[in-house]
Image (cartoon, rainbow, N blue to C red; front, side, top):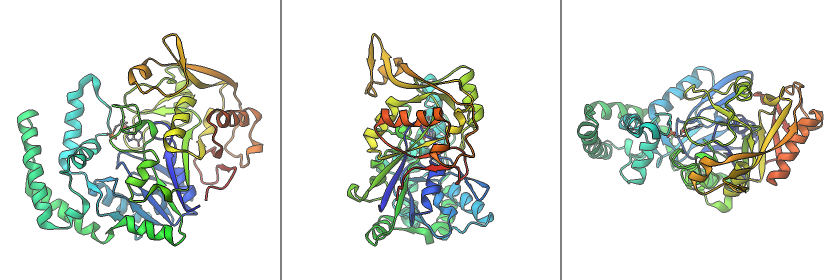
Length: 427
Ligand code: IMP
């Protein structure tokens, strides 16, 4: 198997960082293909914790090439700070490639993210305020600034100037804010460009060459299926395509090159930000999951909303991404519940539906239909083989496999690399 896409199967925060890190060991190249520093991956390597936002988790291995693909929106300051931070901790970052076609997050994108959220009032999305949405808006409007533009003084000056005319009009006339100044932004971003220049390349070509010569590529999705701008719980979504198809668009690699898709899913469900969440637990069980699972955002520190595992969502993720294997995460967090619930359908009005609804109005009304299973009380964190899990934990995983029709090839029972039960090969 040459190319594997790893995606979030729920609302993000499934623990993709750990599985990327785990699979990266066997890969030659690790590629980020969408999103930006709205993502946050926590990886524990050699007992040390690393929090990465933009750089692919593969960077923690000295021999891996890491790529930030064209589908990513890059805040250069965040990227440089992150590089500096990990270099100071002894990690070599020389093998990072940045697509020349990736979009740049500019200061006016941060400002707009905040202003647009405020203007939405009660209908706010709960964005990470990192400028992600406005940067993608500019990309689609064909006025975005790409990394390659930053490397050319004249090109950058022209594009920045025309963007500022439009943005400042909006800031001053619509929002009653101060205008942003050209010189300050121009000089600062040219400085960033010089620091990044040596990493900027045609990354599609680099990935293609690797695949052609038998290399293994891991495409690392950020966020999750239900945050996908096309297939997620619109409008409560991010502005990119986290699903597996996004890997092709966001890296410049065709779909026939992809061999396998790993869907990462927690053994329960979490969500940050606003929007419907049928299995959300607003009681002590939800508190217990949040406390046991340390469910607070890596990027914003916000407490995550917690709820039971939702098979309707998992099956939908299988469909839209063609998931071939599940990595079920944080099974250990469910220790201590007498009974576990799995949502197998939604009650809407008098009807039971089993497929993810197209209408968000219907999704908002969805009441979960649960199947109950016995819980377990044993600590799972030292288990290394599936057969060593308590019977109830095995049954829980087997039931998820049965209901989704996809094998749970990896099961995670703690944050460490070694706390991963491997039931089959991915590469
Ligand atoms: P944005 O991506 O900052 O525009 O935020 C849009 C929505 O996506 C909000 O509900 C965020 O909380 C959510 N979101 C963005 N990135 C992540 C992530 O990495 N994990 C979980 N939720 C995210």
